[in-house]
Image (cartoon, rainbow, N blue to C red):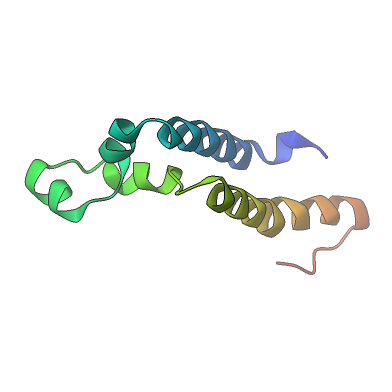
Length: 89
């Protein structure tokens, strides 16, 4: 697999894993990143729109999300490079 073709995807996977594992053991960090509409509106914490996408409830949720990312994005493009066509997209 040529990882140069998927740099953004791999960066998102790495950042998501790092942030999620940090939040598993640090509730203060989780509470600072989680999406909470009232806090966004009243305290103007707009970063929560983006940061909430990188946190996961538990390892099962993280693994499922990463599998989905790899299966739906990386695998079809990898197969296209090998077999010459892409039926998945």
